[in-house]
Length: 326
Image 1 (cartoon, rainbow, N blue to C red):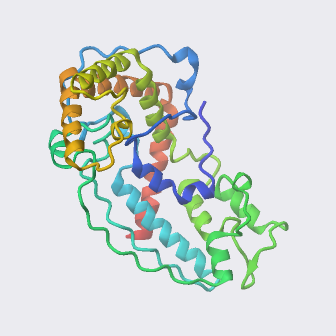
Image 2: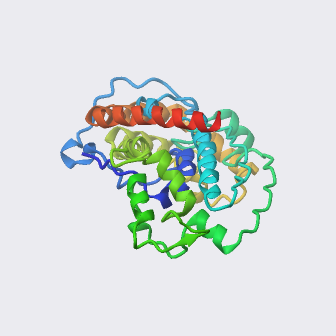
């Protein structure tokens, strides 16, 4: 069975950012925990006749029903900011969250899942990103040593020794071993940032790791890369690219393989157009999507009980977030 142990406080700090990245350009997903990771389950699942597909942006996968959507991730971040401020008030401080930059991506969460696949974006931007205006962040306010200690915890924390849930963290905070005191009150072992993350994502020992569905998602993607049908389709795509004069073994990392420096320059656009045309010719996206979806279904079946528990806990988590932010 996969571990139910949720991410430690240090991992909670960057968790939403990690989830936001999805699988765009991902590499090996080794270490993703699931029952399906056992070697005896490595048989290639049937897929039938793949649909003809090209632009991967907007594809719907079986595991999508369990992944935390961007709107909920943003709501959870706001809720965590409220919890941090509530914690900081206990010590006579206040917390103002830094302004979050607008999260916009014309490629979407799956737009580069199998490499570049949009004919329109390839023709316009090559392998580069469209120009975007990033709002200037306000400078982070200066904090005194006590305020920083309350917010982030001691700088010498060992992440491996941190509590795995809020129940453990509260025991550690009030224990005799914890001698960190600010304004007469013992501070959380990982500061208010760690406490807020545990309250949201790991309130007790029964909490399922918030990243568990994403781990399954990454595992299915990694298995699909090794599947003989995807390997064959990639080989066909590579042969097509050779016909255009480009020797590239994989659609992932084409600019690096061809040493393209100007990702939106004329040469990059020419290569990108050939890349997408070859994907269309061999139906790479259609084959890969069918295979990866099949692996996701296998993992969903093998982890059905834990995924149901995760979904129930996520609904409870969003109710808490709504009560804090609303």
